[in-house]
Amino acid sequence: MTTVLIYANADLEASLHSTLFWREDLERYLAERAEEARMLLFSTEPHVLVVDRTLAGADELIAALHSQALPHPISIVALSRGAPDPNHGPSESGLVDAVLPLPPGPEWDARLVDVLQVPTRQQVRFEVSLEVETRLRHEPTVHRGHALNISAGGILVDCRGLRFEPGDDVNLTLQLPGGGDPVEGRARVMRQPIEERLGLRFEAFARNGDARVRDFLARLASPHNP
Image (tube, rainbow, N blue to C red; front, top):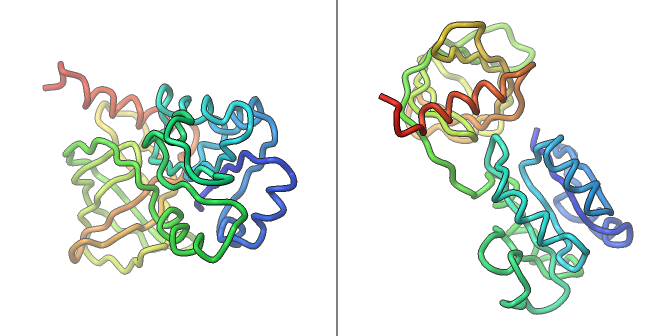
């Protein structure tokens, strides 16, 4: 499930109820104070961050994502009360994915469809060959294959007999090098670029799975990696 963190005051929150941010398939967290928003940012690890840039601490919240990355891509949406100010700070200097004018209007819909479908910030992908198992949630059939590449946001899987569609939620088991139990978690089907290949976005990991994936990516990124 896609998670959205909204940093806004109560009055603005009420006006957002009529937007796509209140779709039933989204999980939302709301914060009215900068300290609470920062805590939720790293405890819930949202896929979309929505920030009222007029609130105290808004720029610092955005900047925090560039000093302490999340384990998956995140889209940042800045809410603007008027014309964008190029001198305002990080929320207007290319560090956000969308700037939406307030109050909400029909022009939001098309932009939010893109923002909510796939977070747009790109992360480094590494070529790998890892054993992976996938299955639709609540269904017993397991599909075995290999991950061809991996990033902090997801993997590309080569697997025969796939019957998945974009938007499907799947359970995932990934065998990382070095032994130990496989990493287990949930992912969402984002694309099927060619037959028998599947692009999956990580949604959540069981136990310490997220830390193990991040450690594996750090080893891949190391200049000493063979």
